[in-house]
Length: 115
Image (cartoon, rainbow, N blue to C red; front, side, top):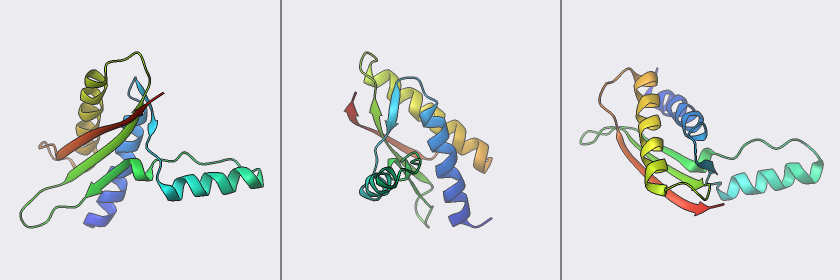
């Protein structure tokens, strides 16, 4: 499997793991996700969950290993620090499950809002 294929599979696994984390409302949608959802709603078609912009996976280069950035919107009433720690742990587990590597990638979790 190429690095690009691993990136896609890893991003999908991270999205699933993050959305299953208590306190996470949703991943930050990107402009393309918002436009696609808007067009689908106008046509009366079911929308797909927007999440591609909420998780960014970068392949390793010669000097650095994998890096994962997660952008989430949280539910009010939970401490953001606790939820981001859980998101980070879920991301590391998803990485290990997909790649089989014990070493977790560089993981950055950014809270972009509260609902």
